Amino acid sequence: MPNSPTKAAQLVWDEQNHPYSSQFNDHYYSLVDGIEETRHVFIEGNDLAERWREMKSYQSFKIMETGFGSGLNFLSTWQLWKRLGMEKTNKLHFVSIEAFPMDVVQLKKSMLNWQSQLSMFSSQLLEKYPKLDKGTHTINFEDDNVVLTLIFGDVRAVMPELNFSIDDSVNAWFLDGFSPSKNPEMWQNDLYTEMYRLSAPLASVATYTVAGLVRRGLVSTGFQIDRRPGFGTKRDMLTASKISR
Ligand SMILES: C[S@@+](CC[C@H](N)C(=O)[O-])C[C@H]1O[C@@H](n2cnc3c(N)ncnc32)[C@H](O)[C@@H]1O
Image (cartoon, rainbow, N blue to C red):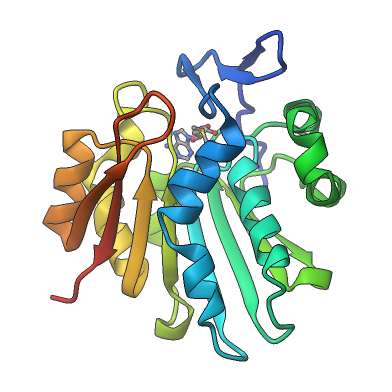
């Protein structure tokens, strides 16, 4: 049912107001430093700054994320886009799929942690954040040519329904479910098959996990994987790029 409410996130909070999922028994981001983890794993893991500096006028860039969570990845990505002073003719399209979204009160609380760095972005997101109805919610941040498409639903049901034209396909993936051992249903082989189908040639992938099932899934569907140093307590992280078959 397209407009039925989705199941909201079940959270507990630590003393620093960091959200923890009581449903998945996992943290939303590294407690070492959430913003730095986002920058290291997802932004640098996809070489976003380098690639955006090379964008030509009228080009768009599409990112797809599995697990919007607290929106930290989206806000940090938007911040970089603005900081680089991207041309008005360039567009950033950030698509994020989330099965158990935070409500606006939870989102506001989690953003208290990033007030000093991200408040000019989080305040705009909070103003436009949709009700938790299943389906697609498109939010336009016109001043910066940024569009956020939030899809409230399970990646396993949502991704097979998506279709992008060749010049509107995904340039970079943020694979950010909870850890594969706690959230195995999100990291199944169908995910990588759908990623390959929705990806532009040479699309990149970044994730904090190097779990064997993720590596094997990416490789078997046509991604070439690489390890980079991980963030915080993690020794390694994974990047990948689409190779043509
Ligand atoms: C590690 S958190 C994401 C953190 C987030 N990217 C951020 O910036 O805060 C993982 C997210 O994946 C979501 N999730 C778990 N299983 C899912 C599924 N099958 N489909 C879509 N989202 C899922 C969870 O609800 C949670 O919000």
